[in-house]
Image (tube, rainbow, N blue to C red):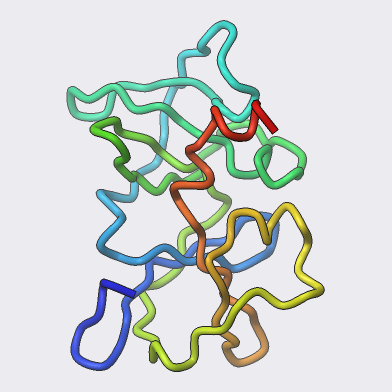
Amino acid sequence: MSNKTGTTSDFVTFEIGGQLFGVPIDQVQDVFQPRRLTPVPLAHPDVAGVLNLRGRIVTMIDCRSHLGLERRPLNETTMSVGVERGGESYGLLIDKIGDVLSLEPTAFESNPANLDPRWRAVSKGVFRLEGRLLIVLNIATILDFGKREAA
């Protein structure tokens, strides 16, 4: 993991469908509350719409939809994690933002065999925390629409 500070790796954590996910902190541009999405005709089903965030057009990805969960309408508690890939800005719609956790890289494990296949497809691996499992989200997989449609 490339986001090491000393002997630990830092992750921005969030919940989707009650499951704890994390993204290496160096992949996160910002965290924001999305307002008024503009629908995009003929877009991939995971694209919830676009919005203007401080002068940037941001494509909003519905992570619940991508993981096979029921979509939820935007409300005052909906949050988004801003990421960039290939020079484009994306916002990952999530249920709830968490904390930044510093974790020992030696505690990182491969995906458990019993992890839901849809979640395993977007996971780089896991950290076992006290009473919870932190799934490390693979941003590239979430944003790779072309490969999923070809499959």
